[in-house]
Picture 1: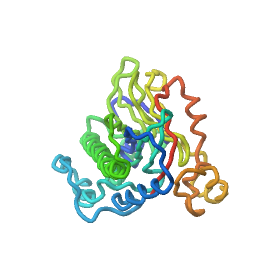
Picture 2: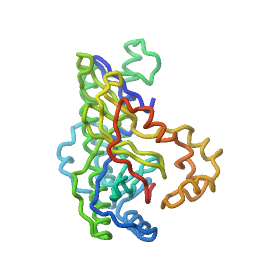
Picture 3: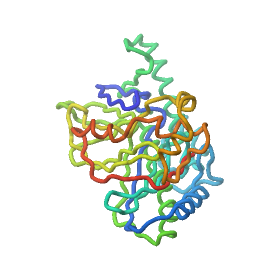
Picture 4: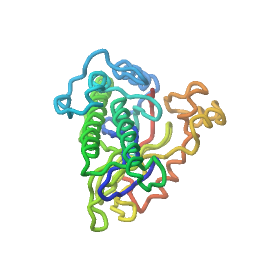
Length: 331
């Protein structure tokens, strides 16, 4: 499930990483503390939309990245690499967003949520299918096929790890490139500087970690690492607060916390049951992207209350910065 954390011994489970390998957050603080009027926020978002493709759109030409040279010689990556070079620096759709925020001490912050785009999806599906086939061949006793696995010492397991690591690198560079362009627009409009380094975290991945005195393959699917003192980002739903947090290293959660508010209803149910005017009203004062009933799947009412979520994980993380949205751009 999304929000799942799983430790395995000797195997890796592609579906426990998820279809958007490397999906995650990037955040950047500015030194700007003055008021922002709605017109200026709309101007920034409009210019950002010109620079950063959203939805299924992509760039017209290849985007530069040193990582292209390090792409592993794996069939699915070779097939998707050319299109991936034009998808780097693109937002995608669904719950991915670009946001202007104000911190509880008054400063403007920038935040982006995105992942590995189509190449991550193709890697995930390819190796989940391979895992299902192998588990069928071995008559593996697993509760359901969503938990189909690849042994770490198999060729297929090693291939998946290489492909996953490439997708993680792509996702991180995707966010960095978008933030570079977004922050450039903000700097031009506001004349601000950026006093702190970027904070970037994945929340869909797997890696070797030590828990309860054992080395395990720790999978996080819609979950954020929260080791003692580790910085993290937990976004809310559209129009609600987001948080910069510090991990408390809780052993019982495998040193993990939530990656966001989490949905309380599916997309179809949200479009069917939520009231458009009511949802718009709940975001009064925020430049948002809920315009028609088709947008209600990403309205605040489709998600859990982020403040309740945060109060439920005080044993996992402590809040360092509270961020209130001013303007949101979605696919």
